[in-house]
Length: 314
Image (cartoon, rainbow, N blue to C red):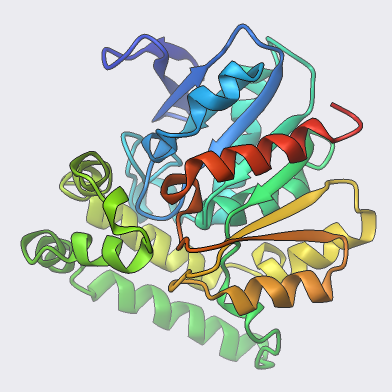
């Protein structure tokens, strides 16, 4: 049974029981009627939108953000509990969140704003939940297959062997040790320095946001479910297919916000997407890296708000 109950952390934060898993979420401006869902990136959580939620709430939106299962303060199930974690599972989570939490309050379509992995989840929702979604803002959009859409043609036997090998590899790979070393050797700070072009934005609050979930005892088992899920997902959950499907209907306006100095997902990939899919609008944020929404929140908020405001159907 799914239910929502208050968290002790703050008045606007709650836990939602999703299929037996505890999911952390919060809302700003819940009295407003136009809903936005903020979807965080890999290794982050809803708290990564620390410089965005209040802005949109003050502009008249009800701003929801949730910790995708496996991240933040949400449950971190392993392969025994959930089998795998991929953007299809996270899309299902968003769908049920819309139906059970948002729909009792408003019937208006949802604007999805994602960072990195959250952008891939938002794209997945735009395809499979298109009647619920008003628009997507992706900043940026990741998926290795966007670099080269050519995939090796494997027969069913080879494909089955590949999947079994991946599952076996990640089952025996010492992720517990890797996460321990990541924390002890200060690799999280190094990673943030690579992700952020504007180093001054890397404060202790941000480090805590990224570090605390990694320290949980269930972190490694959940990461293992993600590695298996994202490595073995079918083509229908991969960005090239999803973009192609969205291009057929063009029902969901799509904005790409890309940091000019993104070291994780280079700008050339955003330009490639926009050149191939002319219905996608690309805006480049100068002197910003992988997390534009946190590195340059004032510009991110301004551009995003203008895009949403100008949508005809809102």
